[in-house]
Image (cartoon, rainbow, N blue to C red; front, side, top):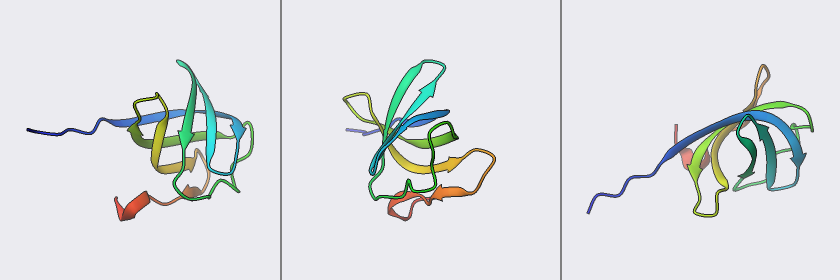
Length: 82
């Protein structure tokens, strides 16, 4: 059996920032982004953020990489993946 992970990207403005997650306001509505390790200290409410990762069954996005758009990368890719 072949297993395929759906790669996902999302971009929008941070509308809520917590210690291990953030909510992005996107054109398709809010997206909750989960981060494995705390690393959101540089993200502020209102910042434009781009995220890549995989979708979870509950509709959240598990981040493998994230950056403040037009700024410095906030969090390197998780688990050493490029």
